[in-house]
Length: 236
Length: 236
Image: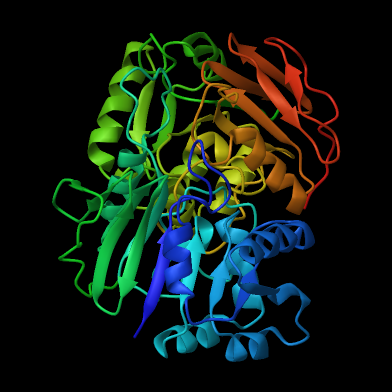
């Protein structure tokens, strides 16, 4: 069974690193004694791997970091689970492409290897990174990502602030612009929310809820715990 | 003389479309009886051109839109001034590249054609679009932009809100990540601010001020009216 846990943000306001999603992470990796960590989204990979390793240690899960592996592709082939951490989505995708990891990760997830993503790590699970909030600080070979699910993720989703004086686009305006140019639906998840995928079953977990954006229809609120229908298999 | 006016946002809070920068626009185009408008950053080009044409009409300047020209490259060659409007920077750059306009616009600006950019139109005046805030809704051929000035622009600059509960990166964190990967300095301009370029003289205008971000040094506040030194000719 294909299993993914796509978390909006590794921290929710008022709780610690991976605290609000701990139960879901434990369930996802219940049968994985060793999980492979991908720290490519941040500049300081050593520090990032250390933080993640310590946190997973507290949950009784051994974590190895792909940036310490001699052969990253081989590390993916042997992994019992994978955790792609957040940071900058462009930097992350460029390195996944550069290391030739797109197809190997896709093959393993199709074969049942549990996948955990937070923030940028959730973004790259979609068909493209076209719904990231990140600054394009480096140029990946293409915006095409891991394509593990048939919908886009928009992490750190924020509702428009009616009192804002800022003239820049709201998140809803940005996602509407995305749908002017693309057909793939977008699951926007507030901080504290996450998406659980089990084969074709897609469910929203966590407390914060989210919104489903589809072409030619207005955004629809998704309450916590709800199964998300209608994601179909529309691809760009 | 090379002349550019790079405006953070076409509207500042509490004033109308191109109102806060009207004086600077009048000065820039004092000798241009016809200005070419580029509406590529928005989806509805007709509506966008109409809005800009009306506003320029109020200032006594005739505006023609490049999307109505039979030959966009020829339209650039004959233009007496150019105005690239805001919207989505990726959509804008992709179309500039697709229409073969990068070099023609660069040649004309080097030869003294006045250039006005707002928001995305200011972003594309830099060497790359790597400091845009926009969502990457379409993929341009490359992030390399018009390269009219030797620094990056970050429009709609916002200071971090100390009361925010949001876990996403602040603008300062994003620009710091940019400088982890790149050397080109960034002029970040708050809404209401603008950059005036006259050959090698770069000055901050408007009331809101900005910040200069450079590699290996902390950000430095730029007060309104100040000449910005030290932008050098560092290129990536």
